[in-house]
Each structure stands twice: as C-alpha cells, then as structure tokens.
Image (cartoon, one colour):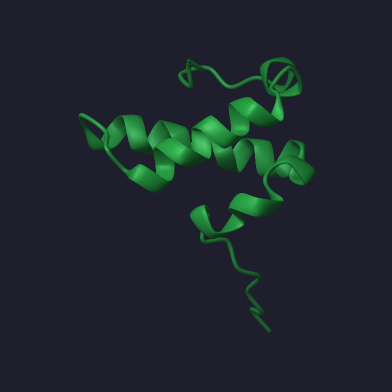
Length: 71
C-alpha cells in the first residue's frame, strides 16, 4: 500500500499504472475509516496528475478539477 503522508517527486516517479489504479479504486469506493485517509489519497492522485498526467487520464473525474476562467 502507498503511504501518502510524505509525497515526493521521487516516490511519484516510481508509481506504476497498477498503483494508480489501486489508488483510484480506493477513492471510487470511498470506504475509509476516516475522512483524512480519503483526503490523503485524493492529494496523492492530484500530485500524480500534476507530475505524471498521463497516468491519471482515466481518473480525472475523481479530482473534480476544472479550468476556471477568472477574466
């Protein structure tokens, strides 16, 4: 299991597609003992999206990230 307490670029660079799929599955099931564990997974997926966007293309709906036009 991936620990999310300390997210580093190096740890994200070592993740596999299987790791990301498992992370997304946990988020989709939303079956966490407390809200903080789910939030940690969400932050990890978000960090992956910024550093390795190709790995989260199928899971962007979990991040609820939309482009905002602040003009």
